[in-house]
Image (cartoon, rainbow, N blue to C red; front, side, top):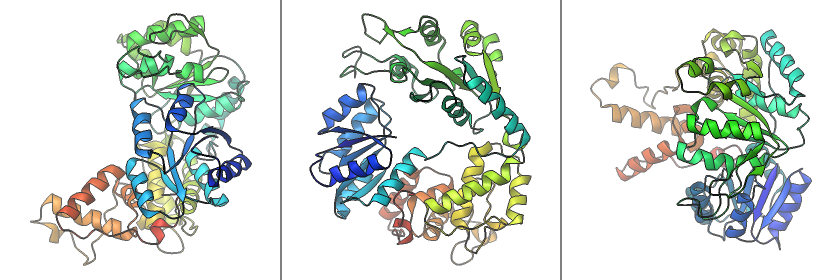
Length: 446
């Protein structure tokens, strides 16, 4: 865990730094925003930025986004300053941490951001066989291609391989090739020099250099443009990269893992993926079965997620009933483990009794809650879609005691979409439930 603390260490932030170090974090420090950006551009990297709210947190978050530096920000300030907390969250901060810091709260935030564990929860024979093969090939330097449908856990398996490799002491750096615009992916991978293109305000170390001595995961590599594939192939063959706008090559020592949810052999045949790059990457292939093909994993994963999200949301630990487990095992899981995780998360939030019953399991992606007057399907006839949607959102929010994050999860929409809807309703004079005690009880889990 790499933590970058932004602000003066004289006082409560210094205490926070010592607590984080005691929790096993590697702590870096910058006095101001420019220093923080310089540190992040240099390739030192950070899993989390803890920023003093007296600095311009909104500017920091905006500049991180503009330079595509993926580092979540937690704002902090002395006391429970509601205005500062609201302003920081609106600017895009993950959380607001009151100072002086509470050791347990810092530990919870660090765990929430880093997802504390990348263990692969499994019980199915097919999963056990896959992990056995992965462990055997992890010690080599061979390139590994991990294939499987979306949501099966390809990045998790890549982390499993890295943790059992000779490079486990180095960094594991992941790049989602599908999420970065084509024009920017070269800079993301190889870095750039100041002035190399519009917006290149300073030298930026790329992911290859950041992963030097460790492992670089090229996630969804099938989405990479063919022209950039040629430059990637050269980097793999020569073990050196050229920064965009640079004048000389830079030596790198990285192990490459790649994932794809497409049939790369078919992509090669269609001319969308280079055959020579495919051969280079495909020394070993690990194929992850769909969740429906490993049914014994479903109950153990469901129980794991139920406990995880009960703890994250400060809710009682409730076991899954036999009926709930049967409902989960009967589903086809087109979204695989990711869909199962979201389904169990919703069920944990909706359950009200001592156990999670089957009626809390929503397999359609959106849990339809009855409104307070017990509205039936027939009574919705003649109403507009917008009115029905508004009632569903308000009722779900009320059920979640006003917690926006929980409500968005249940509804299957983004928190930004939910906030935009709520602003629209407020402007229209609709009363929107405020956050309640339970909604604010757990900063790390919200």
